[in-house]
Length: 151
Image (cartoon, rainbow, N blue to C red; front, side, top):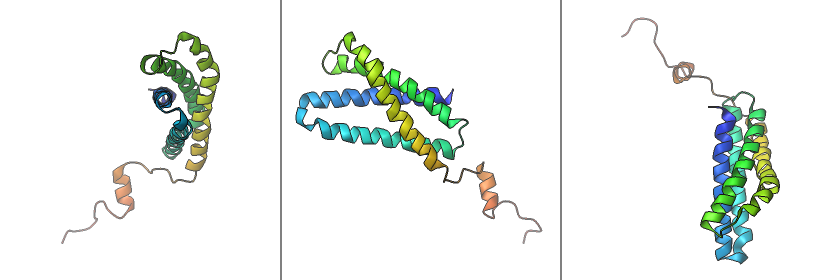
């Protein structure tokens, strides 16, 4: 599976679920919307940044292009899924909201994915990449086979 498809699909579902949960909680408590939205936004941004760090650490090929395409997929996917989620679970949002979601909402979601991923990729440069299989690491620590006769 292509790396961007996995990242984009997962983040589209996660962002759409977050939009739906925030909308549902806002309907129930309109005064607490700012706090809820800030917490959800922080969690989403943090998760993407950590995933970016892990991609750089694991040496994923062409991570910048992967995250760019994933951000676009996540933006459009979250827009469509968010409208569907709100229409089913919250307030019967109609198809008229789809245009706004596919332009402004998708662009905002794409930025919420691409910018933290870029920061994570930059931070991941300072981590030492994995060296290979477990046997190779075991041998580097002084383990492995002994040479010479056994006593």
